[in-house]
Image 1 (cartoon, rainbow, N blue to C red):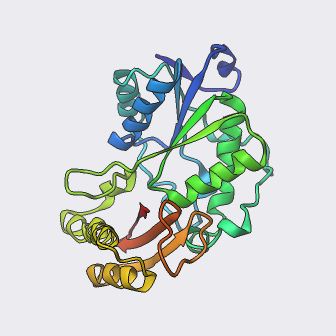
Image 2: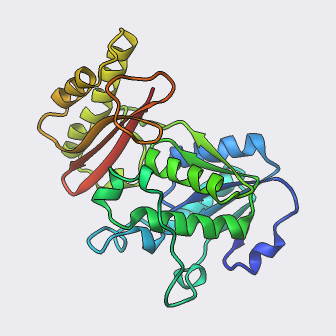
Length: 270
């Protein structure tokens, strides 16, 4: 497995179909599922590991974010990754003032309201990585639904020659959506956090039983989440516009909950 650290190193990438999995490290089974999908659809697999400072707010956990690089590299090698890109901050942000991207207003709200500037930083780093790696396909999990929709919009709007592939959320043995931030949860907090997948499952079962009204589905979810700090729970379409009723194959239930100091995101694609 090759290790690339600079844009100059990436010139050694082969001229063949590249499947790209951008990550911030602290890899888990969710990331490995993206790698597995990429391996099935491409000739050469590249993973990036970079904790991007521009998507963190001043009060967020940039300095504390887990960075087990050696463990991540071992996981990548075992998964059959061909190359890993591990740039330094000054490599991707060589200028004192970086060019920024403005997210589309119709995809704002939710995380954008709670984390001002977050998506500008996400789009900024993803565009840089796309330009450096020039992949045929790039793989992102559906758990970060708003981020996925933003990146898909950027690729379409800027005519980027990359297919942004959405991959299903992977869950741990107890149903909690896999996330690098789950390590922050104490055993008691993890038990509390299980109310999130339980609420989504209850709403999904109600939907399958015929319930379509937003108010009924969300009331069911709020009841299960009672006692937690729910930052939002909403039914919307794929343009993040509120819906009064589920539109099959075009709807999302988005939820963000704070458990202790840890913010957890989850969603249900309907």
